[in-house]
Image (cartoon, rainbow, N blue to C red; front, side):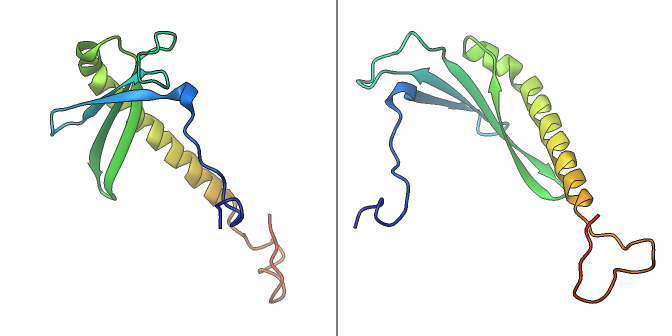
Length: 127
């Protein structure tokens, strides 16, 4: 039985988006990944830019917070130099996203009506 017969999507590698990944780490603060665009035969694809990605983990009162982010850099030295600021920005973005999710969740809370209560049992009123 094929995956199509089971209702699952067909998963294919996008040969137009292939990259070779090089990993650099100090095994303490984080990891830098250099994503080098390549053609389907593995040769470099000079028509696309090299991407630098950073990863780290921060300890929070709620546990470990993994952060992943892009770094605008032309080489390893520049990526290392920009890493701390990129971590700070990724953390600020994560905090803003969490606050937005909290606001959205709070707006979905059912509140009692002004007439005194939630209405008759079994009937939910939404704001």
